[in-house]
Amino acid sequence: MSYNPSNILASFPDERSVTGPFTGSYQTLGSVIAGLPIMIIFDNQSTVSVEVSLNGTSTWKTFAEGEALILDMRANKGKADSFSIPIGTQVYVKGTAGTGSFRMSLITG
Image 1 (cartoon, helix red, strand yellow):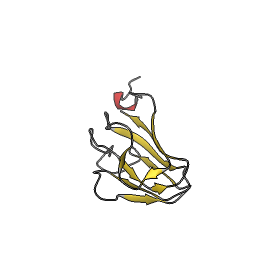
Image 2: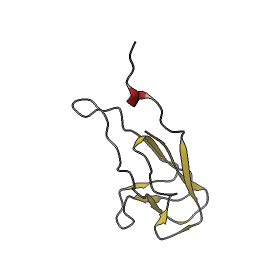
Image 3: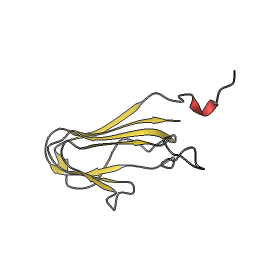
Image 4: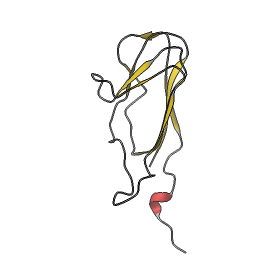
């Protein structure tokens, strides 16, 4: 029996968060992404809308309070067997005031 080495979990889940009150400016959401993400969960557990940026200057997506998004990078069909955010990407969040936190959980390969 053979196996595909790309199907083996290469790292444990990693969780990063920023806790309110938010500053109104972009804040880093943990350190840079060190491996190719297999799955990412963005979860706004705060009481305010939070903007997410992949470059610290422009908004990729705004999450309403209580909103979450799951990105499954290996659920693709067709020629590409995986899709991912590049290694070294820094994720930023921006909100104003509020309580609670914004979390990003990821599994990297």
